[in-house]
Amino acid sequence: MFCEFENFENENTNQDGQEQNNPGINQDQLEQIKDIGSVTPAKGKHLIHCLTIVGQVEGHYILPPQNKTTKYEHVIPQLVAIEEDPSIEGLIIILNTVGGDVEAGLAIAELIAGMKKPTVSLVLGGGHSIGVPLAVSAKRSFIAPSATMTIHPVRMSGLVMGVPQTLSYIEKMQERIIRFVSDNSNISPERFKDLMMATGQLVSDVGTVLDGEAAVREGLIDQLGNLSDALGCLYDLIEKGKEEA
Image 1 (cartoon, one colour):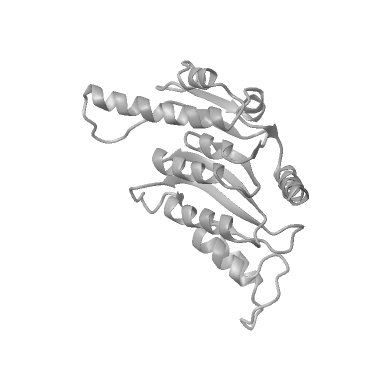
Image 2 (cartoon, one colour):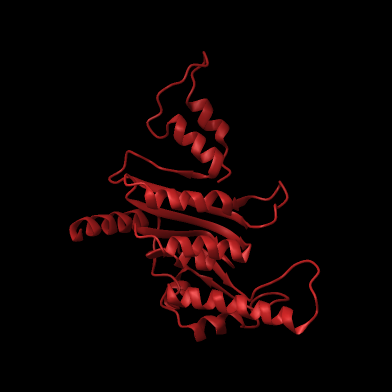
């Protein structure tokens, strides 16, 4: 989401400062990547939208400027526009996130899960914390063999009231996450909760770290794969939908 766009700009201009034709990316796509970290490539087999969820999911509070963030107020309108745009045939979600705001992440995940258009997710690097519901929200999910996913209980930072109501609120929030993940993957609620509450893997915390193979074995992610696998699956879903229409 935060690429070094100066290189793109240099490739689009010659020594006289005039724009050159770039077969890989046009100026509108460059601006789209700069502004919201997404792109709609138009030269592929099908017209799809690529949404990146990287860094930390920013919710109701603005994070420090040095943090790489995915802002949910940018993502939610994109998803609505993608669903309503008849020219866009499918959505691929690329994830490399440490997690972030639970309610913002669940809101995005619920929108993706409710889309009628074909959706495929691909976890690269990491899909941790609230990145887990985001990864499973697509109709088909992939994970790179080298990627990892961290499953842990809901954490709250800052000053909180040490009363039973606070613990009840956190427990209810965890149940929302467990229910969503189990409804959108092949892992049972009981097994997901066991992984969430496991001890011995995380320093000063409880939870489980799964690599790509383990995430597939547990039924959390559909299959191992890379970009070409995810795109191939998305194309198949698009073409199957056209045949059934």
